[in-house]
Image (cartoon, rainbow, N blue to C red; front, side, top):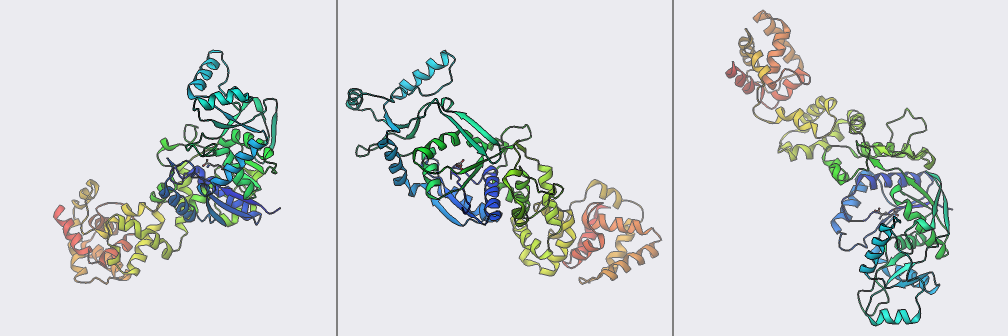
Length: 482
Ligand code: GLU
């Protein structure tokens, strides 16, 4: 049977890293099996769903390279299907109208608590008589629809990640609500709820493997009962481990950075993100291989290799992976990625020619961990003046430094086309005529040009500044500090 999988986010927030990681696994599984990856938007929670979140989810998946083959399919466009399924279950005697009021349910829970029992619905309206129904109707009560859960049933499935999973019907909290009460008088019942909608969709969309976070395990037990009741075949299930924060708890909104958008803004590359997310719960068959593309992973991907244990989110590892991609990226592509970050920082990059940007990027690339680092690493090449650090000022005030800088200024003259050999010759000549060590000339130049004692290749930095006519004024600025 052709593999069909889906990612089914609710548009109640931006694309979350947990959802994105589930999408990665589904995408890899689909590609490995030449299957179909469906995007379904579970937007039935009208109060919390927003179009902008749907857009964010779609653009996030696209940015990560997780292209979907079908969809997006919106649940709100399929409400009729869910209503029909609820009606089918009622007609079959597998679901019923429950008239319990909120107050009754609260009292029931209080009693259960007092007796030390697990909270749940006690199925009290499962077998109402005609008279009881008439009385409730006459009182104007609006019933919900509950699906009968047989307490004596044991639900078992072979999970692709967790192996055999066993749930007792009695541990599912009683007969479950599958549809809300009607909002209008002309409807028999209101909107269907999550578990019912998901099952109807997965049946209609012929989903063969449901790969999702392990927080859905209890839902799976309930959903299997719904598949059976709707006489549909049950798909395979794979429950992936949760992503944990540093304290070992489920990564949540409280952990600050959790949406894919935020990772993008922090300067992570999409290829590094998907690589890292794949490693959050899966290992390459050659476990020493940690850097791989989605396509490489797709060739080897196997649900059996997903870990059972939760995966701790590790910023250092993500940074390391990002570095691997950044440092091997062709300069041309890197510039295009850096331009928006420069622009955000207010550097008018369109004023500079491409060759200059290429040299700057080539020189800076090895220092970058995240794209955002480029701001601090290249700031001095865009701004007219620099701030001199205490160490640089101390150096500038050493004996002979002023003479060295004056001679360099004279040698530069009006040249803004300095070449590498010329720059090196100037350093040699100044070293000789000032009778100082070459190291002092280099340090003086670095301090004078950059305001710091450490940084990228000095000659390259000088040339970059020279080609913008910034070296001479800056050395003059340095002289004023002496
Ligand atoms: N809409 C659910 C969620 O965002 C996913 C449901 C599923 O994968 O079955 O958690």
